[in-house]
Length: 231
Image (cartoon, rainbow, N blue to C red; front, top):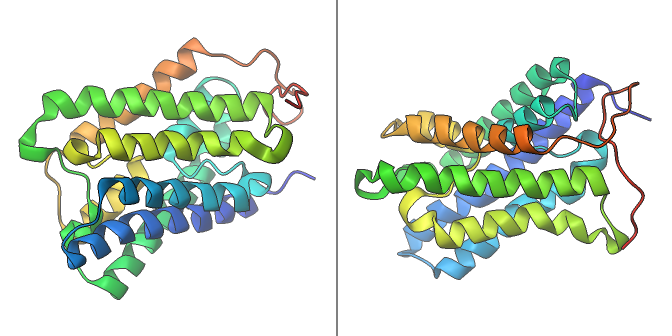
């Protein structure tokens, strides 16, 4: 049975809180320890995304990201009326996760806020756009084709985030998610080049939404036209 919008928004809040709490918490803990290998950081973000997806995908779809929700609506996979509920839940969850990191670990490393290294927005902007496009592509594969045998397609979005963390994290902080960027930025007072993430990320999401429409849409709930593929 399809859950009510408030119930789905609550699931999005909980899932995004887990994502931000684990992901940015690892950044802050790493800074307190003097740094950890980049590969470990990428693994932490992999699980930061995987755990809430695995937990909440059947409750809310586990968007966990306003850019993902925007892309799903713009492509016709969900109804626009759902967007405010999802984004409100995601934003509230991101602030809850970031506030928890602040309370437990303190205001270190700007709470994991995303800032282009040395102000290099020329490199940060296309990097965030491209990896957001890759993330939305992974989400659309999962949405349209289903979880697959053994639920292996659930691994696709967290894998993209892990690769993003590894490859562009050192110079952009690897956002791909406006809620993940806004919460630590506001709570730590870090607003440097915030516009990069609030423009490049939605643009990357909308690019894929414009190029990849679902083959069919359930007229009753505007859900994804999921094909039964078991491989």
